[in-house]
Length: 320
Image (cartoon, rainbow, N blue to C red; front, side, top):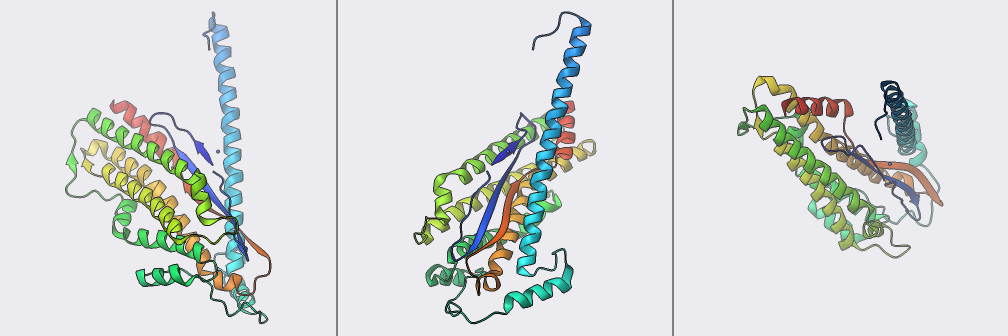
């Protein structure tokens, strides 16, 4: 796991990556990233050297981010190619051809065993919980994430839009507005740290991979629901950040605050969508699978737009 800038009012990020190997067995791992000189000349030299060191560190950080992003995109393309998704680099025609390949095959003694897919209703979830089809535990985990998210669909759309409700509390003081926004950002940073600790807990990792022992449905449901409890708290913070209004002079501050608070929810959206797409493709991927299929990394990336965050913190500093 990794985190980026975490100073007061500053940036925050965390990336949690599933590396999923599908086949007879599914395994996964998580990547959970002086003294003032006596003379003006010496002081200037010190500042210059310090700046060069900062630039080198920033360049190294950018290089690490580029490498991580390239890995994520490469794994996503690989997964799209495997499941015959039109978004793969070979386009719609290639996707159709790939679907024909994965849909065809010789008969196998395991072909008659059901393969789990996403449950989109409480009834289907109950069937998935008790039916124990192939890879049911992955489907159960993803299904709970999806159903919990769908129950919040309207509120999530409001967050993405930056919608300010008519009940928003008016704040006329720029100083007071800055204090309120700083408070929400501090809560967001604290929540991100809690999510990181939750996902790195050994008990969480063991819930889906019990070392060859049959997974426990109650444990899977518990960790999936707790993960989505964090998702709900992120949404509630987004709503808190949009619960007050101010004069037109502060429109940019409120807009950027809403964008920063929504970004982690966008990370959840991408993660759940990709996980659901993968589970829905299980029947094609596993119907005739031999050995292990590597589908690459599925990422839960809780990040922010640093250009927006820097602009917001600059304005908040001015208001204070």
